[in-house]
Each structure stands twice: as C-alpha cells, then as structure tokens.
Image (cartoon, rainbow, N blue to C red; front, side, top):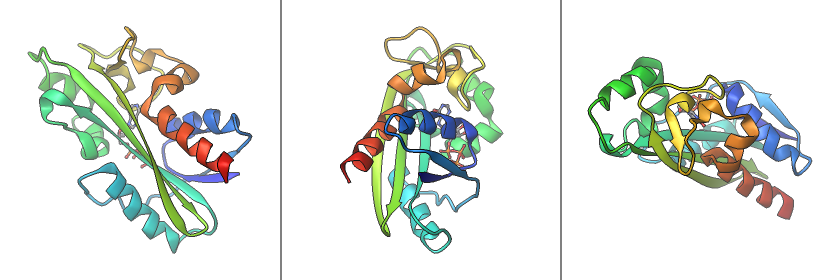
Length: 182
Ligand code: ITT
C-alpha cells in the first residue's frame, strides 16, 4: 500500500489502475501542501515533499502536472492549476482562437518519499489543443487535449486508454518499476 497526497480524484483513479498492476493499493490522503511557484514541476514536487516530511508518517507520493502550449510560450505550464480555475479551458481556447500552431504537451512529475529519501519520476505526452472541447471523461484540460497519433481528446477516452499514452501513465509506470525493484 502506498499513500497518495492529492485532492484530485481523477489522478488517484489513474494511479490506482497502474499500481494495481504490481499489486500495490493506493490510499488517498486528501490534504493540501504548499505548491511553491517554481520554474519546473520537479522543483515544486521536491519542495512539497520536504514540507510533507514533517507532517506525514511513512512512505507517500505526490504528483504535479501541467499543460504546456507551444504558441503561448509554454503557458499555463507550472501555473496550470491556477489558470484552470481562472481562465479555464474556454479561456485557453480563446487565447488560441486564430492560432494555427496548436502543439502542446503535458508533463507529470511524481515525488516519492521513501525511507525519508525523495525520488522523482517524470513523464510527458505530446499532442495538440483541439478547436473546441470534446468529451466529458477524465478531468481538467482533458477535453481540449488530443494526444499525438489520436483524433480523440483525452476527454473522449476511458482511463485505461488514457493511461497507456499519458504523461501520468508514463511517470507511474516508472514509479511502478522502481517499487518493484526495491
Ligand atoms: P493536487 O491536489 O494533486 O495538486 P491538482 O488538481 O491541483 O491536484 P496539479 O496542480 O498537478 O493538480 O494540476 C495542474 C492542473 O492541470 C489542474 O488544473 C489539473 O486539472 C490539470 N491537469 C493535470 N493533469 C491533467 C490531465 O492528465 N489531464 C487534464 N488536465 C490535467
């Protein structure tokens, strides 16, 4: 069993599906931790883990993710959570209204605190931003992100399909490999 400190049930579900593959149960620890405004997701994760070190007992994971839109200079990136709550998906689509270059990618960074040591695992997923929202599965920006090689958005995919190609799937498979090798 491993504890996942997150407030996002969508993330939890994706993590559960992958870690079930190695026989590891995931328990949600729904609490907020400070997300410093860093340059990279890894910085944010390491800061969060360090803060949690004094607050929780035992081994835990956290995960920080972001959507990086090329024509917007990587925005919203590390500000993805704030931008989702303020501008939202419609705001992103509006910013890109006349934009032909729609390339974007998602990044995920998992931080694991194990035996008081911090280890990180990264994952990415290339794709494009759709012209309009499509689908209601998943969470967050899923309805406007079309992964490379697909015509559907993540919002039109089941969890297992998304996991196979997503940034989070990529990162959680690396974590699974690490946990198995210990
Ligand atoms: P935590 O409690 O785990 O921090 P959160 O929802 O705040 O949950 P993040 O800060 O990692 O998570 O997320 C940044 C934003 O990017 C947030 O608005 C998410 O909804 C969105 N996001 C992250 N991963 C996503 C994914 O796989 N698909 C769509 N949107 C995603």
